[in-house]
Image 1 (cartoon, one colour):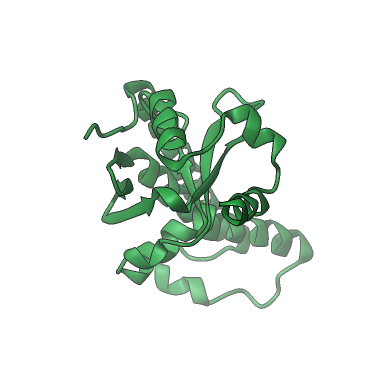
Image 2 (cartoon, helix red, strand yellow):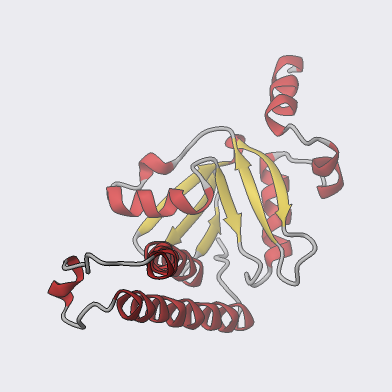
Length: 198
């Protein structure tokens, strides 16, 4: 079966975002240290000055948030960079950075477009159940789930032949058109109604 990966343009865009995130993280580290007047020695990080002012504490807290959050963004971008989608008879196989999850067609309830007004909107497949238990490594499982949740699979905007992949997903999963998805804002209820009628 054909495997779908990021296009060259998608890879360049992801690389630019990755470099920007790394720059932000480096700036946050430097700013946090200089704001608190901490020595460059990593062991001195725990030796916080005792006479901090509010003008030091607030910027330092903002930088601390960036220091903690930016690595998650970097991971998400790396996962997007290495993402591979392979449709098969049994489901859609997603692979990236040691992650390998097969999403069953019958668990796919709808496809939603996120950030439709942006230059790079992306789609997500809404799932009726979680498949995260297929990821054996608990750290990789946590990193994968924290980005979009356990019941969603992103279809990245930079994917080559993305429209063809979306068409395959709609056909194999028995989903309606994009217009029908937008007309049904509650995919779980619609799915349950279809099951009852069957």
